[in-house]
Amino acid sequence: MVPETLAHALAILIASNTSAFCSEPVLGERQSFEVSKHSWQLDLDPFLTLGIYKGRSSSPIATYDLADCHFCDGEDDNCETDGIVEVSFVVQPEEPIVAVACHIGAHSQRFQIFAPWRNDTDAVFSVTGAYYVAYKIRSTNVSVEYDAKGENDSFETLVEIWP
Image (cartoon, rainbow, N blue to C red; front, side, top):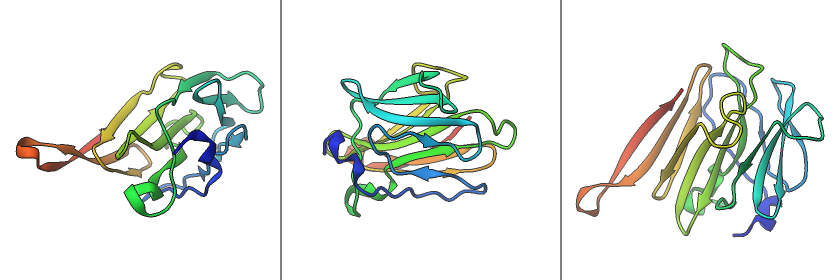
């Protein structure tokens, strides 16, 4: 799929101990965080970018390249987990943190965390599953499960926790 299809309904699979705000990524439409006083927006500039803004400011405090991401919908290929969600931790709820789950290439799925107070140009956490990622946002961390090709062309399930 191409970035123009971002207007399609996207579901987020979240098993969370805290409330999380998930939003359908729509190009050019500003989305407010539920907890912090920040917002985010996807744009084509000329590639897919994610901007994080302080409130309704016109200039982003951070911009991230998502050029190789595409979002899909439906039940095939774990598309129901694609989307963008705010991550809010108990210890610092006002910190603007965004998690992005998207597809890359033909089948792989990537999960990234963007935190402009920690890094304003690159993801602070990133994993790519050969076919899927699944994640849980908790009050103090994010747990991500994904598949990777192991020995003898078999697949294994890996789990990473951030931070």
